[in-house]
Image (cartoon, rainbow, N blue to C red):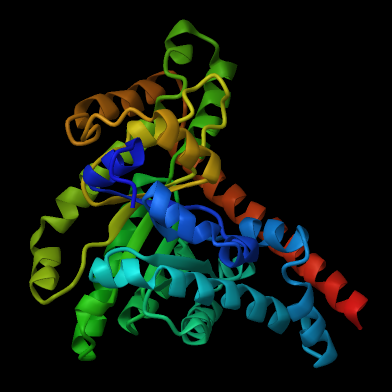
Length: 370
């Protein structure tokens, strides 16, 4: 891996760099292996939007879809086969990282169908199906942090499945996610499962918070409101890290850690800037803390490698300022609870749209092959 670069410095500061993208071309051309070697990438996350884009471009999936069509495979099974094959192959590429880090990194995530975001039992069923199909110890199953998703998170962890909890926006929901994880660990322990084999990350979204809040600040339009633009996402994430430290330093978590369990690491998601006026590495350099993951789109990864200024921990000393930002937002009339509720609803809806785009792409390919 690179040892003299901003991405190396970020890794040295305790941040695991995961790529927020996966395609068959990345796997077969060696690009994924190159990013491990040259950009300090130690994991990959996927989502329905990423898979929809991958299958819509190029011919990488044509042969497999043709074979599936000839076998009379139905649409859902064809999507399941294509996406799990990619994740399994990526997991094999990352296996040396997984082994060298004792399971800490080298992770590849695949998401349950977003249509199931409000269906606890079917989410649990699909989490098991994905886990068993990929059949690699370094896979993580992504489950959204909806109210209905919380029970599925507990059930999956309790069964020994490693989970990437996605679409977290609010601090209250994050606290519930940690509780769901700890409850799952307690169930796994009672079932005699080795807790050291279970890993989890909690994906806290960053830039989308700024996008929604900045829109509302512009509508308020006062100098006090406008001075708060592009501050909420980082403040929210920093307070999430404070919550992480508090809960995992408590008695309940400590007892599980002493029994061999792993901390559920915070993961910064949505770290590509949406506002072109902002520094393109903002959500990387301002969220450096020990034991976190930053999952980056390639554009952000390359910007960080090229000119990211890594100065060490930029989170743990900033809790008071972060709290002051949220207090100031309330004073100017921005409703934090409404913002995070809107973002969760829109996040699920966007992934459902992408999922159906993916289904349409595969349906067309199967019909053409037949």
